Length: 340
Image (tube, rainbow, N blue to C red; front, side):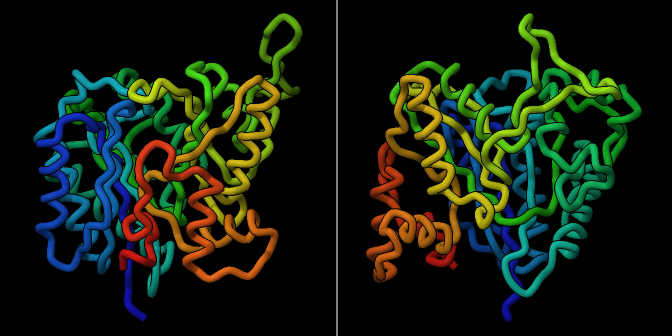
């Protein structure tokens, strides 16, 4: 079996084409790596890059892309809808074939050590690579974002996993890790009200929301910890955003394990919750790539189990999920099996 690792770094730049092109070129220049997609988003001011290859080549490409981002992105002037902590915000290594999560954890550590040693950017480790439970969740590491990073680094509890607690004003910090295949999947609403999208996100995401009393005070348990009301979907992270270029609100979702909650399940639940708030889910958007299996699961749901050819199935999934509402949906570029 061919050994393949996927890497999906997210960069805090979605508007400057020269910077985005430079990052993509840094990946292409590494032998043994195939660049699958470069997807900028102007509202998020963020670009998601996806590439695959042999383990050593993938680590090299991730480092070269990070080096390019450090040279071109200045976080002191960055603004955007998406939470971020640095120029190269997050760098996950994902086992595809012939490798394990433990080996991808080792790759994340190799990458992090080099980024600090050569670029002086502090690196945190998350998900399967996390060294403490407090750092497993990416959102916890990002809390306070870039603007709160200088203060965060002064807290001994937030000493980086690689590097000293030194604030790099231009590049911020980077989060690296090993994780399962994550589907970045966003559901579009027929309203421009971001509060509606945010409310839906709170209702569906696994972490839910804090419980409050009638006066709006946060309720706590016997240990003084905030009581949480869990969301309706497992293995889901979500937030509400506003897309200025389309003048719509969107529920931005990360499907952490699509075999627990897949695209069609998230879409149907957002649709259900939106109706209770006087809104509708009108379509959706896939950022990056998806495994073919997730498309087939959606087709099976929408067809009621009716036998379909693979081509019929994926096209039914596109239609029913509204994946081409905002931009044309190119199967050859969006399904990972069609890329490799």
